[in-house]
Length: 201
Ligand SMILES: [Zn+2]
Image (cartoon, rainbow, N blue to C red; front, side, top):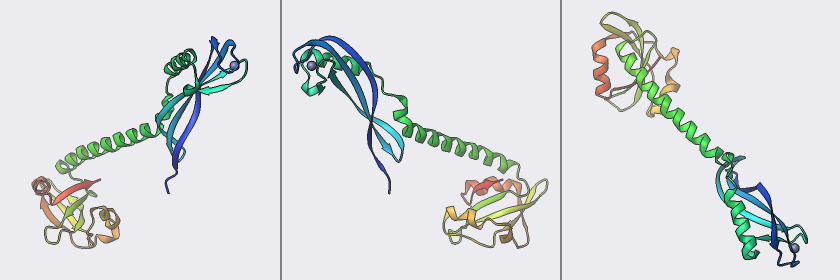
């Protein structure tokens, strides 16, 4: 279950002098306080929702929200509210998500660059992920030797119907058959045909 809701916090207070109080009829100072509301998920503030100003008469302690204020009090409260900045931590959750997305995009771009290098410079131990053209299942090949123009690969004994399952079958004990060779210049072609789709080193 996701635990979410809204919460308020005090942001700012300012004293405004010379304003008539409709409750005690004194022209006196009022404390204007601004509260912010934000949405949270679990304990993380996600994004700001609204800001509200309240006034408190320093003479009679009458507390009002904007709807109960007279014109002068309301314009003072609005001014204080508009000068109150929404704290940046109200955005924490969205900021965290933005950072995670950028990291994900970055590491995926980085991996694509790495794969381009692995295709041109295959190394012993590289694991090539491929999709079988016969049954559409996924499996892996492990490079066991590299010569000047060829690679030798051992095929995984297992295959899986889900791409995400490939990491589960990539175990040293699953490579038991005799290696066979492929021309180095065939690797790019197999990627272009979408038979090979990833290499991990
Ligand atoms: Zn008052």
